[in-house]
Structures are given as C-alpha cells and as structure tokens.
Length: 222
Ligand SMILES: Nc1ncnc2c1ncn2[C@@H]1O[C@H](COP(=O)(O)OP(=O)(O)OP(=O)(O)O)[C@@H](O)[C@H]1O
Ligand SMILES: [Mg+2]
Image 1 (cartoon, helix red, strand yellow):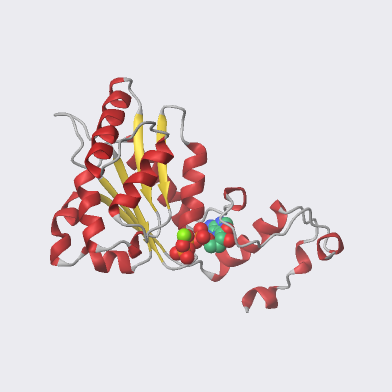
Image 2: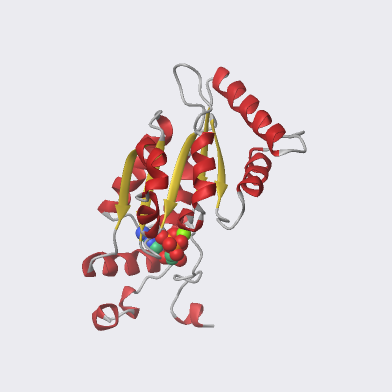
C-alpha cells in the first residue's frame, strides 16, 4: 500500500475533521483562544465564520476535546433541522431524559437542566456548526434560547459557526436582535503559501512520515 511505501502510519490527508491533525496558524490559535474565552465567560453569542474548508469544524472538535468536566456541550451539525427537530436533538445530546412530548415541555426540560447545572457551578454550551444553512425563523428561535438566564448570568452560551454567508444572513433587518447579542465575532481566512507548506509537513509528520521530501516544493506550490 502507498502508506508503507511512504513510511506513513496512516493517511495524512483524510477528509475528516480529526483534531489530532490540527495545524494551528496564528489565526487558528487566536480563534481557538477566543472560542475558549467565549465559552468560559458569559459573553452571549459567539460568531465564528470562515470559507469552506478553513478548519472551523476541526477547531470545534479541538475545543470540545479540551473542555473541562464542568462544561457540557451539545454539538449540532445538521443545520437542515427545523427548530423543533433541533431542540429534540439538543436534549438528546445533553442526555436529558424524560424531556416531554411537546416543544413547550422540551423547552421547560431544557430550562430546568440549565438551572440545575448553573446551581452546581457548571457551564453549558450549544454549538451550531454549518449555521449558514439555518433559516431565519430557526435563528430567531435560537436567539430566544439565550433568554434562559438568571438575573446575573446567561445559562446557555451559544456558538454560531459557519461560512461567510452566515454574516450576510445576520445583517438582514429581521436578524437585528440576534445581531445585537453577538458580543464576540471573528473569522478565519485561508492559509498563506507558507502556512500551506507548514500545514502539509505537519500532517505528514503526524501521520508518521520521516521523509518530508515526498512533497516537493513545486507540488506544494501548486
Ligand atoms: N488548520 C488545520 N489543521 C488541520 N487540518 C485542517 C486545518 N484546516 C482544515 N483542515 C482539514 O481540512 C478539511 C476541512 O476542514 P474542516 O471540515 O474543519 O473545515 P470547515 O471550515 O469546517 O469547512 P466547511 O465550511 O466546509 O464546513 C479537514 O480534512 C480538516 O482536517
Ligand atoms: Mg465544517
């Protein structure tokens, strides 16, 4: 197999967002630091955008793998769900048993879950990946989820992550209120040529390559 031939333990460029292969450019590092800050502080909504394939989902997986035991996260990556479907999914992801049969009962169950966690000094975050596909109606309902609060604290930190169209969507007049709640926003851009070279070498190294010359500078340039 080609892996043996090149002295690799595994495929260096598999298309899954595996955090093990994460190569942090300065922007990725900043983004991860900001995301971490966002989930550890009551900042309201956090928005992360970036073009297709710039590593957003990989960053999120990394963030998840670094969360401490006192933080629970629901990770939604199916943005074609209706809000009710989303809510069901979120409750399931948080492991909330007996969530009720109607959307209203599910909202109550989620609220109780959040209050209990808050009392125990625990954090709860909701991550919505691929959020550019969410409808305006669903986004508005998600905004209402951030109304779960005590007089002093938000009970749910929400991370909206998606492609640049998400920003465009959020600028629509109907999204005014959600837009106002976003206190932390940043984007990650594509890799520079130098970063691309470092990125390729980093992945080869992680996959076990000893000879990094298997990618010539010309191949990288292309
Ligand atoms: N900084 C990085 N370090 C390691 N791998 C990366 C990095 N950026 C992207 N990748 C790789 O590129 C591919 C796409 O990354 P990822 O799925 O995280 O991008 P994305 O921004 O979520 O894209 P999309 O907008 O299509 O969802 C994956 O195979 C991932 O491993
Ligand atoms: Mg993604």
